[in-house]
Length: 93
Image (cartoon, rainbow, N blue to C red; front, side):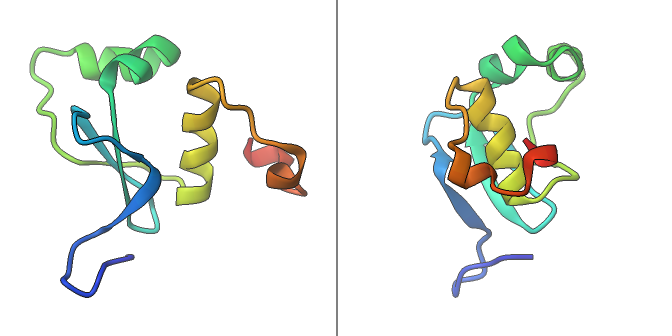
């Protein structure tokens, strides 16, 4: 798990919105602060989970690395990865 010197989780440099209502934690311990409406708009599974009235917005651990989660969120935000970002990881994106 990736933590800072003060013991906090490291945050994504891109997805760390102060007004986000959902926190995702990658499998390698990076924190992503995102807006639930973007997740709901692009994923039926996440729409179902986040739309459940019993859902408690606490950090959700995602079985994906920070690199994979960043790629996923980029696609949701219409920021397709450039060719150099994809490299030989095409199957991840």
